[in-house]
Length: 143
Image 1: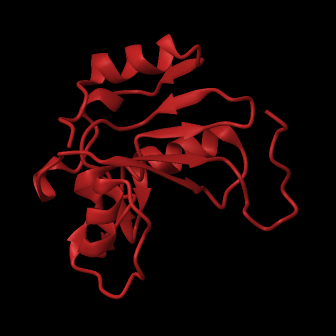
Image 2 (image 1 turned 30 degrees about the horizontal axis):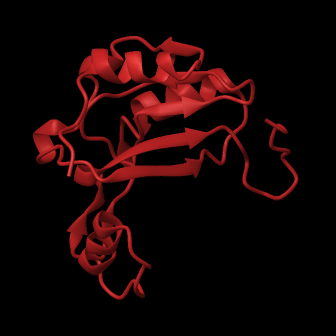
């Protein structure tokens, strides 16, 4: 189990890995912490945005939409490899998951079948969205 990184430590960790990081608006305080605890963290969830265009994808992930308020993740990974930070703290990216699966993730063991939705994934995982339509036609960069 890990205590979530502060905004400054997350930014430093990403930059220390050589990433080009873009700080989007007030990402450091953009969160859903009023909906429940943030942490301990156990991993990272990576999704694709089902959108195209970096600017519009970053805005969507920062603000959310009518059915799901933002932030929808912590960072958006653009096609050029840059990471746009849009949230720090709890984000609407993981939803509910299975407690057996979470225990397997924590123990770094094989994942059991997912047979119930009783655990708050938004609390336990960082979320990153890669700009991609996810239709099998939108190419991923080689890198």
